[in-house]
Length: 128
Image 1 (tube, rainbow, N blue to C red):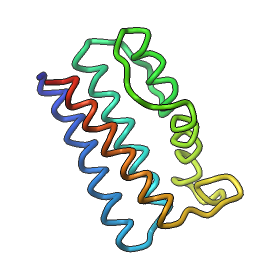
Image 2 (cartoon, rainbow, N blue to C red):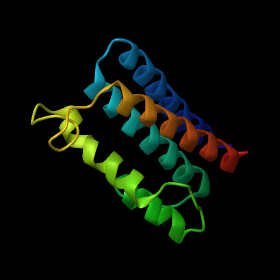
Image 3 (cartoon, rainbow, N blue to C red):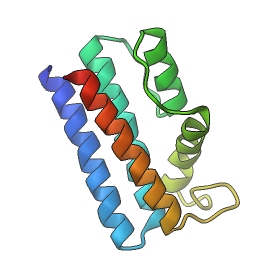
Image 4 (tube, rainbow, N blue to C red):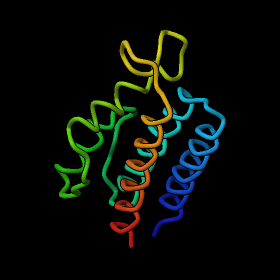
């Protein structure tokens, strides 16, 4: 595995750890932000390792689509991608809750952490 790939994956895992700590503190918006970032960085580690060019984007759907075009299939549903894409900006800036017309809660964060763990493990299996 390339050193740069390892760095992206390490950052991904740090974001996941941060999300878990934020969940314990009932800080749900930043928890979701770190979940989105963990998944984004895990996917970008695949771009690095496979030498797939990518433009600057935070869209999980866009990243997944480019990976698929390069024969890298990640198990993320369209709904999961839409959810992750919907939390990026609202969880970073005070323009409302992370989810449209909905305030994130513990259950949403717990489920999202499980999603991030699943994606990171899948990425790791691709990289081995």
